[in-house]
Length: 273
Image (cartoon, rainbow, N blue to C red):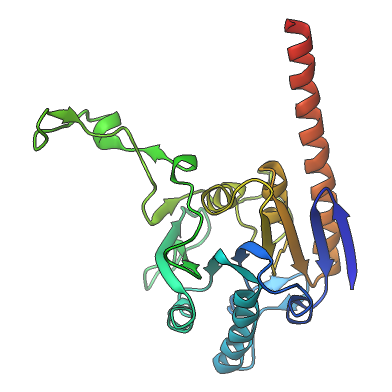
């Protein structure tokens, strides 16, 4: 197993099931899981397709159990999956945790879509917690525009004093965020890279500064990069050598960007003093 450490962020190369067993139980605040979807994508020469759906699901149930063990008692998990498999995850997970939200991340697509049925333009995410009475949710960190009040300026006449509706709100469970595409600034050569905006919302909502985040299928290590930008700690696991090395490069670049930004801020403060 190869490893790389930088400023509270650990990257591990190897089998997620084996590595998860070595992570201390109840040590992690948030787990973001974006596993192989079992739909035949090519990950650097590895075809993401199990011999049978049952074998795939049994493999998933194994790492789900391990992830639950690693979470602190007030910890949260965001679990992604293919539309055809997320119902199985949902049923399995709700027996062990509290599924609070079923999120739809939707996006547009410029690629070829289905012509004889409705093509898929979304990916589901389960948001679950260990203790529904004790978990982190920083609502004020993720507020979005509420158009009823912000743009339409509608008034709620049911109140004692008629008042314009709020201009901001906590996001609902349908999130529009563009997919990562070729030549976008954050693009890495990976078939299912998730956008930083997605991880930014999840991490801000469900962790506090210095909290520890685990991503057992890190791919290009977007979770670790965003965690670093938001002053959190992270553990990222990835099986593929090339993606692991991309993650090291990405974390080094992110670290340098943060240092450069802090230096510019300090210089600005000094010049204005």
